[in-house]
Every structure is written in C-alpha cells, then in structure tokens.
Image 1 (cartoon, rainbow, N blue to C red):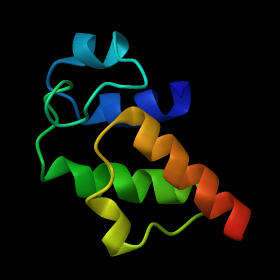
Image 2 (image 1 turned 90 degrees about the horizontal axis):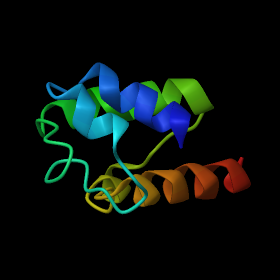
Image 3 (image 1 turned 180 degrees about the horizontal axis):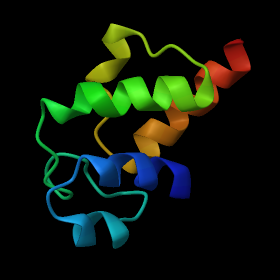
Image 4 (image 1 turned 135 degrees about the horizontal axis):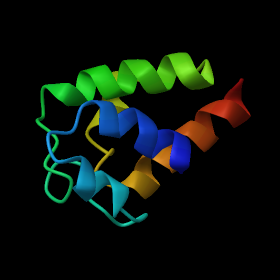
Length: 78
C-alpha cells in the first residue's frame, strides 16, 4: 500500500490527506485527487508494477483497496 500512496501523493494537492489514507479511502472523494490526475496515477502504477490496466477497469478504481486488487489481479494474469 505504501508504494501506491507514494505514487498518489505525487499528484495530490493536499499531501496530508494521502499520508492519512487507509484501504477504504476514496481516491477522488477522500484524497481530493483531481480526476484528470487519475490517468497519471494509473500510468505510474502500470510502470511500477509492469502491468496493463484495461480501460473498463478504470471506473472500478474508487478506493485504495480497489487499486491493490487490480494490481493483484493483473499480476496473476501475467
């Protein structure tokens, strides 16, 4: 989770919200990440974990836990 938060924090205006995040924290609503920054976050996650997140999965990425689950699913498929 720390790696994900490190990536998200780069794009957050309020870094403190990200530092206090938990698995249920909503990326846009709770962490106040601008929706246009989500693409940058996803690209960084894909690079970091050497995975590809399909476009149809993007709308399912609401919480930190969702991101971790998508990473886990993609790693199993590789």
